[in-house]
Image (cartoon, rainbow, N blue to C red; front, side):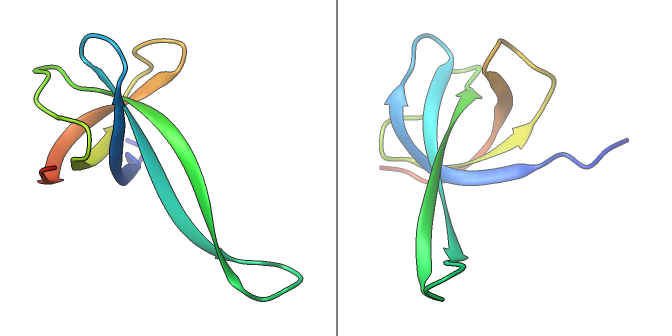
Length: 81
């Protein structure tokens, strides 16, 4: 079985029932200026029990596609808002 990706990010929005939007920040080296810059990406995460709130930091794990844009489910809450 393939490895499931885990992403960690902050909840920025409750996007309907059982769905939250998180933003994941990664730091990469700029190819020309050799400075560390931040890159952001948003993911939709399935929250079965509606337990997270805006501002929480969570870990999500990859799963089968649950909708057109949602392929992650909640694994754990790292720290509350």
